[in-house]
Amino acid sequence: MIHLNKSLIKILYYCFTIVCFTTSLRTWAQDEDTLEPFFKFKKIKSAAYVQAGVSADYVFKNAGAFTHLSLHWLINQKWVASLHYAQLSSQNNISRYTYPNSNKKIFASHMFATFGFGYKLWNERKFSLQPNIGIGWAGLHFRNVENKNIFRHYLTIIPEISGTWNVSKNFRLGTGFHYRIVAGKTFKDINTGTLSGPGINIFMQLGKF
Image (cartoon, rainbow, N blue to C red; front, side, top):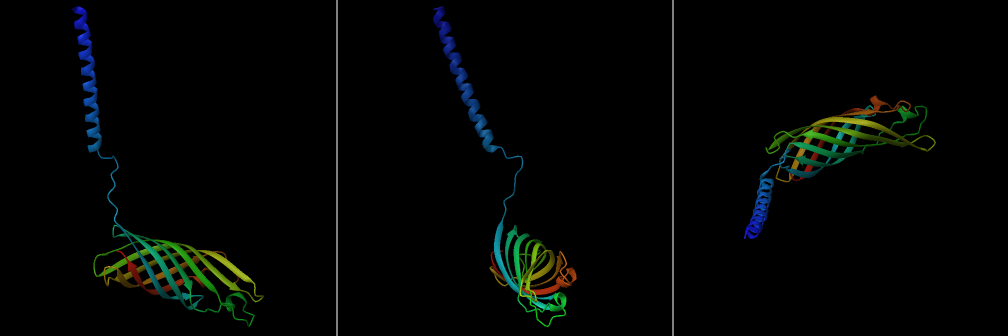
């Protein structure tokens, strides 16, 4: 009888241990579901839009024009990251800076590609404002008097401020002022002063804001 009682006690002990262990697992699982991570990130609201425009610039110490195209990512209706490409669309004779003793006209192909970062003010109002700075690559290409291709590569930094008229939910018009700072190795009389200069642009934006 005593032997039976001891066996019964062992069985009850094992059953009690199993129940306690199972209960502990359930409690731990519930706590895990309710615990928040140490670093809790807020939900990011993002939108994207494209921008196309033209600008009148001071380049090669003369008047010039660029065609612009850019992609923009708007984060929380404030921060803007962008990829920007522009191509010189006017014909600018640079022979006086490269081969001044030649009668041949030399026309340059000038372009730049930048990554930009900006901040939108009053994005949800009728008119908004955006300061922006872009940094990237600038290129120069032309044929010399011997008809050989000349390529030059530069660093460019472009601070800009622009204003937009929020025409509709998905369409905006704007204008802005920028200054191109182009730095790199000098080629004859083509240098930072020749390539850098201010500009005024007009553009349209299409997408989500």
